[in-house]
Each structure stands twice: as structure tokens, then as C-alpha cells.
Length: 147
Image (cartoon, rainbow, N blue to C red):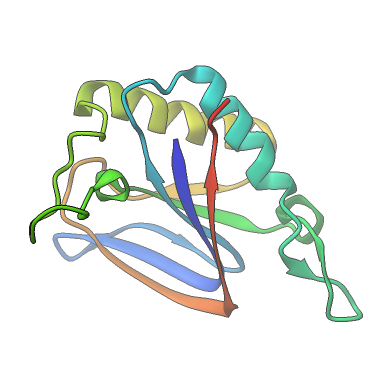
């Protein structure tokens, strides 16, 4: 699994004019799933994400985790994270998992994050979504499972 993590002051996702998820301080996660990902990948990422020290302490150092600051998560499915644009001008998405498998692991990740005590808001899997965020920093990272 591959996740683009953006530290956020506020964020929301809208589908067909309706807000489906909205958070204040926390993380926006763009989540991609590939063919060989399993529940182990989702568990690894859930633990990694809530404990990732990307929030500033009183000295301005990135020493605090999402759990430390009581942050929230806006999780958005993003199959295009496995787009390959090395050849030609149109990316291919052969590395992205089939939707029926991807939705299972995406939902598993969100459930595991909630089990860790984090508020998790989401978009709508497979929908065209408008994502708005105030990127804090900006801080943007790519986190992969590869377990």
C-alpha cells in the first residue's frame, strides 16, 4: 500500500456537492492499494501513521504524533498513486489493485485507524471527489507498507 500523507490544518472532501468527510487539525491520507497488498500492510500502515512524528512540539521540532496532538484523519482512496507514467504520455494503472480488493483494504485501514482512537472521515471509494485542504507547513510524505 502507498499513502501520501499531508499534515493539515483543515480539510474536507466533497462528492457531487455534498461534504462526505471533514476534519480540523490532522492528516489527509491519499491511499493507494496494489495487487499483492494484504491486511498486514493495512495494519503496518495504521500503526505507522498514527505514530508518525510530523507535528511540532513547543520548540518547533517535529516530535509529536497524531495521537499526541489529538489529530483527525481524512482518508481518501486514490488508485492513481499506482499510475506508471514512465512510458508514453498516458499513465497506465496496471499496478493498482482491482476495485473489489482495493475497497476491502482501504476500509480495513480506516477501521484499524479508528481502533487506535482516531477520528477518521472519508471520501467515497471510486467516486469523483473534490478534496480541499490547508496543508500545514507544508508537510507531505509518502509512506509505503512493503511488509
